[in-house]
Each structure stands twice: as C-alpha cells, then as structure tokens.
Amino acid sequence: MQVLSAVSELSRIRAPIVLAIGVFDGIHLGHQSVLRRAMAEAAQIGGVAIPLTFDPHPARILNPDHAPLLLTAPEHKIHLLSKMGFGQALVLPFDSSVAATEASDFVTALAQSNHRLAAICVGARWSFGKGRKGNVELLKTLGGLHGFNAIGIEETTLNEEVVSSTRVRQAVAVGDFDRAETLLGRPYTVLGSVVEGKKLGRTLGFPTANLRIFNEQLPPSGVYAVRARRLSTDSELTGVANLGVRPTLAEITTSPTLEVHIIDFHEECYGESFEVSFVSILRQEARFPDLESLRNQIEQDKSHAIRVHAAYADLRG
Image 1 (cartoon, rainbow, N blue to C red):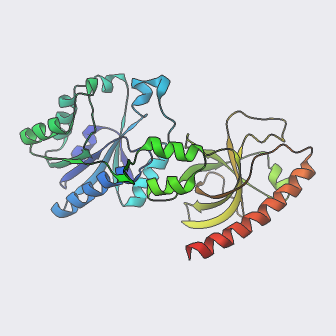
Image 2 (tube, helix red, strand yellow):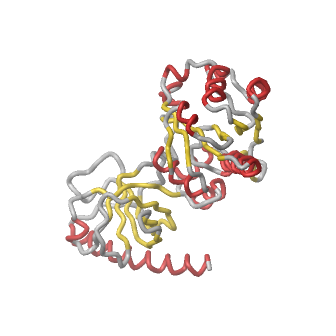
Image 3 (cartoon, one colour):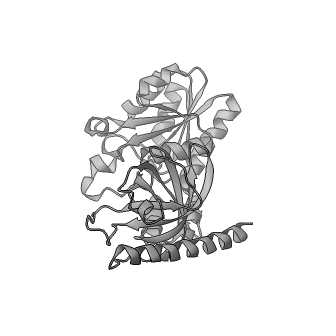
C-alpha cells in the first residue's frame, strides 16, 4: 500500500478521488460502513477511494490526559486498510497547528490539492477543525463551493447499541473476544514484529517469536491458544502464547510482552510481522519456582492449545 503523508501529495493522483475521513481506530463495523461507501462511490465514477486518517490520535494532542489506548497503531491500521482493498491511504501528522486549523480551511486545502476531488465520506456525527466546529453540514456547504459531494454515514448499531471504538476497547480489556469480533466484523488481532529475545524458550525446547506489539489496548495477561498470520507468506499458523510480564524470570518488565510458540514451525523470522488472534485463554499468567516447572507447564499448555485448535477448526468448518 502507498502511504501519503501530506495533503499536497493528492495532486499526483489523476483519477477522481473519494476521501473517507476519520480516525478509524479499530476499523470496526461503523468505520467500515464509511470506508466501503467511499469505495462504492469511487467505483461508480472510475475513481480511487483513499482513507484519510491521523497520527497520532487527535486526543493525544487535544486531551492527552484522557487519550484512549489504541486498538490499531498506524502500522496495524494500514495493514487492515490494505486487506479491505485500499491501494493508498493519507496519514496526516496531527499536532497543535493542525488542531488550530479552521474546519473550512482544512476542507479547502483538500479541495485545492486536487481539483478532481469528487466526494468526502465521513460519519454523520463526525466533527473536525478548530473547536470541532466542522460537521457534515459545513462539508455540504463547502462541497457546493468546490464541486464535491459530502456524504454523512449514520452510526452502525447492534442490538440498539452504537458500535464504537470505546466499546471494542472495553470488550478487549476483559478478554471478551466474541463481543469484540461482533463489533469489529472480524476477529480482534494484534500486529507485531519479531525481535530477538534471550532465547530462553529455545533452551526449554519451545522456541518463541517475541513480538514488539504495535497495539496499545491489549487483553488481560495470560496464556492463550492463538492463530498467527505470517504476513510475508500470508500463511496462518497455530500456536500458544504468553501475554504478560514473565514473572518467573528475574528481569520482570512492566510493559506486557507477547511470546508466541508456533506449533511445528522451525524457521527464523526476525524482523517479520505477524498478526495474532486470540482463540481462547488457557490459564492466567503465573510465577513458577524454577525453569523446569515452567518447562513442564509449557508442555501442558501446548497440548491444551493443540486440542483447542482442533475444536476451533471443527467449529469453523
């Protein structure tokens, strides 16, 4: 996927442009309705749909003490947008100067960057610009001046409840993966790159891929049966993972780490990215008196995970 980082880069695009604008943290069903509408509009006119999002999350600048934990950091968000079928995305750096930009000036800059801007799709209640004074009505007014359509998409509801990133975070925080999947329209996943560890798992007979996780909102610490998609080969693998602070080891960390033992996998994969989904929790993270006790427990965890994966495969057909 081609990632643009400035409004001026839209000038390079020769086809009619349909922008889908939003923070899109999580890319849940509500976000998808905005994004898919942009894709549909672009398909009708032979144009190109481009998501426009921001980094960091605007709340980090506007209200840093209450900024949410990210469901999808920029790397993960780009990955998910690519899976949806987008070939390009515009990720604008968000800082105090952007926050101080008048809503009308922001939209005018978009329109003037490429005179083939055909439409802008947003959530019907989306607000933007200085003082958050911009809304769909302003977009429609400016669309009339600059020649683009403004499309506001109503909120998505499930069981009379609005789908939101906040509700997804709440589900993930307590490990309710079924609810998170319902809200997301896909399994909840984390994305991370494999970094070199101390190779203790290999010493114990269970080599692990130690992931530097891009996500911030994580499920509870514990040992999980997981599925791991290796992005370089687009292959899905099964495994058992520990998410936590490794209490048996002396060098306990305060930041959770994700260590994945991939079953029947023997390749080096340092630097590669894996997208991990949590199938089922096997047990809580625990401290063991010695490494031999830990090794015996990991053996039990692996056997348990194999049974869980077999049942999961039967359930999913």
